[in-house]
Image 1 (cartoon, rainbow, N blue to C red):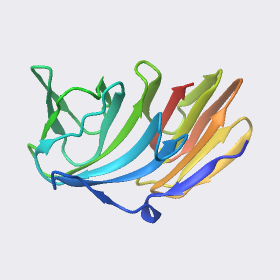
Image 2 (cartoon, one colour; image 1 turned 135 degrees about the vertical axis):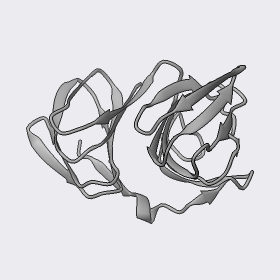
Image 3 (tube, rainbow, N blue to C red; image 1 turned 60 degrees about the vertical axis):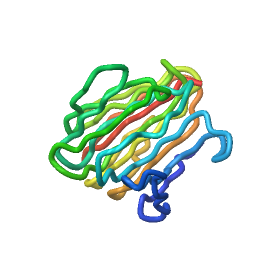
Length: 183
């Protein structure tokens, strides 16, 4: 199966109900109406609550800006740029922007099934079993070598695919975000 490509610039921004930002949904799988996995990029413009997604685990990372503070379950968590965290999507979550607006990447999946991690050139990734796989190239053009075939991605582009079996890859150029969800 080949990679599906989605350009951030071609995805319309959906304003948040609370007016605090916009989201660009890069992938909703298997469908936008009944998704089990969702990957999005959000522009957070001011403090406010996140929407609740009961039964979903969020993997969240700041990809532009100076970080955020998330408050949920009676605790505050500082999230620095480039450091992903996971949390229960059903929790009432409040976001504070201590140093101004941010752009964030957000993977939503069934609990314990998804992971999101930053990659730099030379990093290797491997997949085993039935999974949704993807790589998001943010500021840089990237080259991902996957099963002997090089995939070149322009900046602000998501590549994703359904995968079965064993495979491995390596990031050859640029930097970005690898994610996978066990199905």
